[in-house]
Length: 354
Ligand code: SF4
Ligand code: SF4
Image (cartoon, rainbow, N blue to C red; front, side, top):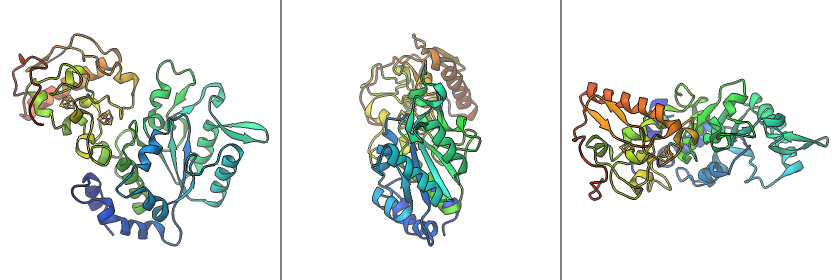
């Protein structure tokens, strides 16, 4: 079997080099299945179903292989095709017959009115709330994976003024939750995390907020193909312009995710490559802390760097300023420096390759 180290190397690589499918899948199926396949119960709370859609777009391995060869998906609100009482029965049967299961939670948990803003079905004529089901199923699970920023930290459902009292799963449960944020979560981030759980009985190394470091260990900014433009002060003025998107609100410097390397939609593209800023969808504070998405960031002064942004993004401002300031100081200390003239005008450069 692959060592954990080799496995993590594989997760970092994308379609162009090794892939989970090419190298690992047969091994994974053998190790994970044994006499019985691992049971997975997928619950949905307040969600747009975007993470389910993203997961169904997995190509490495394809969805059919995950569902037919890798896991025994005992319940999924969309893929199981049941609702109301039938859904309740299926969840209860799944728990009863699967003493060891992994639960995946998609969506934020409404806690207002004792959870009554979100119900799944009924028990003895009384509504059963999403909050109740996630607690019951989550506390007994072998592992809990929160998929997407709504499940990890509340996301758009918990945005101000949050009338339904939505929270992330880790705030609800009294046990560790593996967080795979993003709006949506990249299929590789989720399938890679699940594969590690199945192969080694534990997730990849986690950071201080329980995100797998292998996918969330570096900022978008650190991996960005337009990083030299940032350092040379070649900024886009409007979405659609070429250049670094920093002055039109790019949250890459404060967002931990490997989008520039991994890319989306079968490894084809990602926002900055399409001349639009990263809106920080994998950040715990998304979307409030990223709003307004296209507003200029606050003016930042740091040694050797002055970025004049004339409108403050109120919520993101302080965090972003601190992050950029720290980044700038780090650059200078590490000797990478900011090569460009700070007098370069934003938007000057609209051509050229990445
Ligand atoms: S600010 Fe955004 S576009 Fe500019 S280098 Fe950083 S991540 Fe890339
Ligand atoms: S580039 Fe930014 S906004 Fe786009 S998916 Fe990655 S973290 Fe989310």
